[in-house]
Image (cartoon, rainbow, N blue to C red; front, side, top):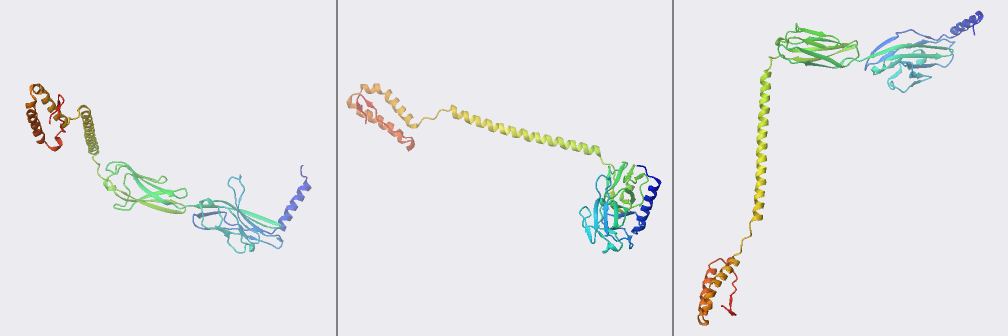
Length: 353
């Protein structure tokens, strides 16, 4: 619905009356703050009251959401007494004044962290007046853990790079190089990259050898590191490669000889085992001396059997005894273990004794 001229006049007079009734005022102060990680900082918020401001005093600090998609995070509240809130600033934020109702709603943040950066809003309410203001805080990290090193072969005539990098530190970071030993000036062929931290050296010479310092710097601090450059004559690369090849070939040769002799030894052991096994299978067991003696006596008696048949009983007794004594004398000459158990033969029903 369109507003008439009288309606606009009434709205203007109402706003003016509210402004006159509210004497609450926030004093202007610095709107942008910068802090260093680990330090502390005070965010100002001071106000004045008048007798017309008769309501309950409420003070609230918020960390405004950067994308406006999430609700603002409450940092600290005062309603008769301070009420620190949960969150990333828990235990690190408090009011500067023990009596904020006297007109100082400033807060102090201790042990600053880089994540504390953002926009903070101070809101003071005492009916009928309400005032708020926003301040911006940026927390920076000093350069730290700066590391220097040489990249490339430190030989005469070679190109090389000396590099420098800080592992910690807020951007932007800048780097600068100094030579701190010998002729304290950078090589004539050196070029420095202030943002990348690289000092490039062309056609190095032994005069360039020495100790170099790199400074890393940002808006809140500096850090440094040292590196030693030692330029030496070129090494005999061909000789090193040839020596490595010869050493490798010798190693392979020795290893091959060892493997050959090990395999040969294994084959000899296997051959000996097979020969012993064949001998055990092919060779017949030896005859005992007892059976040999018996066969000998039997053969002698058999050969003389025909002659014994022609002997008469009268001379058989003497012949048998003579043959028996001959055999017995042969057996007694042998060791006891070789004397067979003799069994007298029988002739036509007669036993020779």
